[in-house]
Image (tube, rainbow, N blue to C red; front, side):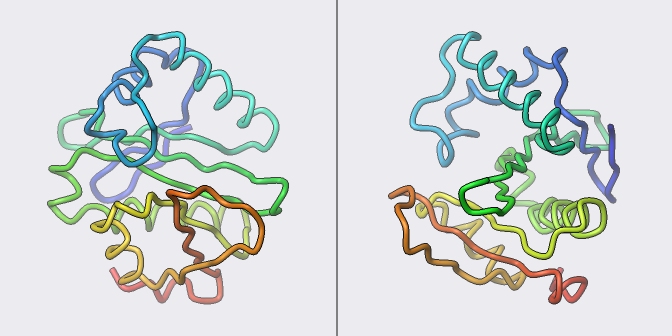
Length: 173
């Protein structure tokens, strides 16, 4: 499956994508806010890829690669994950700093919201983000995401931001 936006192509992760996934998840700069350590060997990435494929098979949605349309360059990754304990879908994304600095983060978030609300027919989506990722926290709060606090145990280094379908398409791009 491929979905296009103005500047990007979002391609479903498949079994054939191990090398591309490793290219992203072995990069310490790209993964600094999502992994404790980058994938130093391809076996770590293979485990991640297998989990992604199983998620697609179980829920009919999951992870996407992000390609820049003009150059076909692989620039990032979007992960959509169903959390059965909370009965919600959470997402995160990573992209090259150049693309984030060029203001493309809102377009990536817009893809996620459009996909979640108009394809998956969700009512709410949760953005999971490392608390040190101040740039993207600023982007998503400017887009209208609201901080969500959980009463149960949560990851110490992550914040969660919620966006409701009732606010969409009033997103402030």
